Length: 551
Picture 1 (tube, helix red, strand yellow):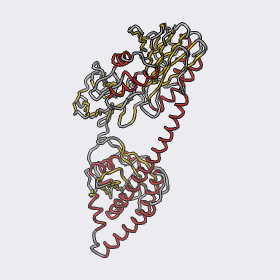
Picture 2 (tube, helix red, strand yellow; picture 1 turned 180 degrees about the vertical axis):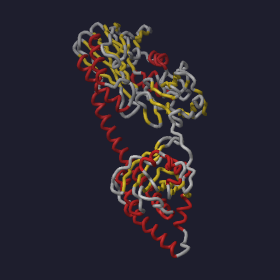
Picture 3 (cartoon, rainbow, N blue to C red; picture 1 turned 90 degrees about the horizontal axis):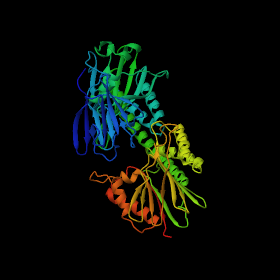
Picture 4 (cartoon, rainbow, N blue to C red; picture 1 turned 30 degrees about the vertical axis):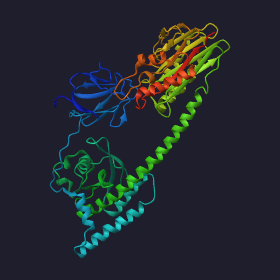
């Protein structure tokens, strides 16, 4: 076994190395976590890393903002390899240890293999011809390049662009098979992902030599293998053996943008018919073509990204409109009471939900907070809304919550849940019956100056079917004010790394005597923003205020 795996934790404040020696290592913003990360975007216990049979596995612990590995949000336990980058809020964790399942490769040290600088090949095309033979060669290159540039001028979907580039390559050289691969992944751990591959007859290619393409990326060179069987390393590579490749070449998709040059992928060509299929002149031509192709690929990618961004923005606008239509357009007007509610999603759409139902003698109100954010949470909110409207008129609140929980559990992913508060207020007596399903305890601020917290209930909705709930009771007397809120308020952070917390939010509530429900709502939203000191909110903020007026 190679030794102890290490994690390199980076942030704006610097970096630190952490050895992974325990079977289970937790990460989060709680000081009880094995790796404490003071980051407002993290949950208290955000994720864990497991040391399993010499390998590392990462799992998210139901965090609000999720855990990303190499730019993708993980959906379950995920194996880690050397170079993998874990994104946790504003922190990046890089796996440093060479894990057992990492593919090991030797450098290509070849008898017969020829390696050329890309820049040398490109400059050779531009030099004045030294002979008539050289002139013929340069004319061939320039003619092919001119034709390729004209063919690639029209906009096509990027998938069609890849196929078109392969057709141009087949027309230029005597390759039997060809492929285009784009490098994806974080710096230092990029892998070639084949975007298009086929034979001259149009049949797909199943495998491309990873050793060749990785060296092209690492050294930014073009590689010619006139006879693969003369290469000590490649002749035993599985993809070479199974396909019977005899000759091959590979050139980088070399892209220059504002003086900054990078290799975004490779073009790969080979032949199974005979050795010495390709010449240095062919490699020069393919390298030049690859530069033209790289510019087209990048332009097509940027255009599609722009179009996709516009489509997403329009989708989000429509989703936000739909979501707003599902929330009450105005707070209920009730004699003897003052009611206000509002929500501020931290994204275009959010996962908070509130609603009211008023009869002659009763006000029923709900506030729910779906785990996570964005469109996924908004979709789950629609499930919650349906469950609420099916059961909030049930006489037995405990049974109503059980039915809502079962409906949510059956219709949302296993890693999602909803914190929820349901209250039913008798408008005549001020008697309040409620159930708190894992939600922040609402604040009942008494006219006398005392404070009650409404905690009775049960577990969050969506984790287990047939969960049991209890009802709690309270009483709203004249001058009393009830504030129901989501944790977007209590989990507000400022630039100093301080969290407002429920205690701080309670102080804000108590500091607002004698104000209307709407004024309280607006003031509390403003106070949360002021505490954040310009720092962007990391969660939706939703609030309901119910005040009983003096008799």
